[in-house]
Length: 255
Ligand SMILES: [Fe+2]
Ligand SMILES: [Fe+2]
Image (tube, rainbow, N blue to C red):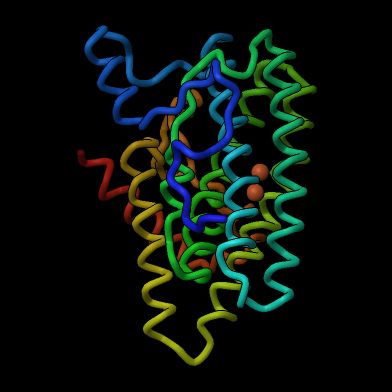
């Protein structure tokens, strides 16, 4: 079986369309549609749940590929990745059900290939830094926001379901923190490369996701993504790393 497979090799039902997010943004611009949806709108919530659902599918596939791509990694690392496949498959089911609960179906919207592209690192330390710490750290921010939106809407189904998933994501980030450090022990150059890969993932989302520090959001109406400090601390991010993330989100806010 081939390693590091390209995004168009992912198995999908025929009615699903996978596209680069940039392409989607260009098409929306061409049609004079807003780039950012309002999160209180039901249609926007459906689109967001669909985006998370396809993200969970790719997270499941990525953890499986990490297991397959690095057969020489320590056994405990492989066990953690196998557990993550199981967790992400449950998340896939949960978000699929939530999407249906909101009246949507798999394939109603475009699937972005962003997570899969972030998975293309040829070192397992960089792979878990980018996916588990970068992308799943972002998932903590997104889920915390979704919980707040559900609370405001008085929707306990979404609030509780997402809270259960968030608990798992915190363990995935923690796993990433553990393995990024363990795999690079005694090799500061390899650690630096892994951290750089994670930072490149973070940058993409600071710029595109409109992510901000909570303190910088004066009127939090849910349109901006704030950094989930508490969840990230639980997940093994250091205060310094969170401050760096905040600093880089401030930098990108200038665009
Ligand atoms: Fe997940
Ligand atoms: Fe995860």
